[in-house]
Length: 353
Image (tube, rainbow, N blue to C red; front, top):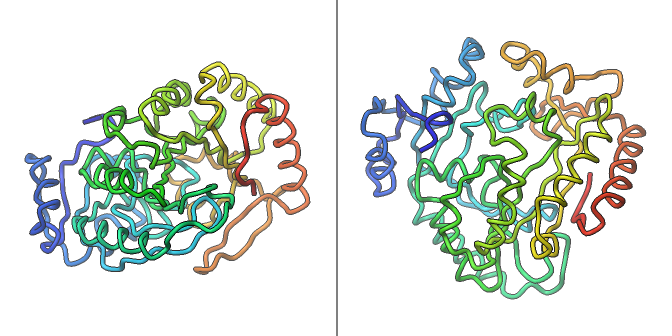
């Protein structure tokens, strides 16, 4: 257990979750933690929707854990990073990236919630994969396999510190010749190296220039250590990709990315580079999260909230998002992709936006 990242002193649990084998295993893993029964993992006043929690933003992530039951089991069509978004086995995160969209769902700190009904989730996924049959043609997600993102609202590498849910998913996809699991991570958990994925799980290590990450990627594994893990994960049987995200425009940003691309090449063996691919995602920020960040990490907002170069767009759930102005974003992205092609010509871009 990485105690600097996660050392639960209080576990909020739905009784139905605690009654399941996986729920009991989670409780047994943290025997010293206080246990607090709750009616719903979605509504815990001490954690969610209380703006006074801003002062304890990071402390809550380290000390609180939630145990629930996933009620809705659906695989949503995606088509960008993955063909489908799998029903989640967790949401929330022990890390605290300043730009993360996940806290918007519950409000404020949003620590890890782990779902105990893993057998229902894996059963649903098995049936869903079977119904798809063989992938009829390649797309940007994958040439041959249906790709399922298993970590849309959490970081699976950190989730694996809490339960065996992620390990069960890797085992499930190991035996699926027509499908792959996929998840993005900012945390190097070397326990995953022993899981024998046999090429059926794609790990997307998120990268940004190290100095920028020190400010924005709070409580994550340093970028240099993420780079050092790429060869090891590829050798262990994972398909290894990188997420170049979010791309944050600041003074000297292209020079910093150039240094990162050089470091990426130096860190990887030819066999790893041959199977690497990238997603490129320009920064999107959120007005509500901006207000929260001003209460605990205002320095980050000097990079993230820049009205002079950003425009607003209301999201599907009614939130106000900000992104670089359309004309500027197009230019920034062109500059970025030109630099990437020059510095890392081996790195295929699956999509960029």
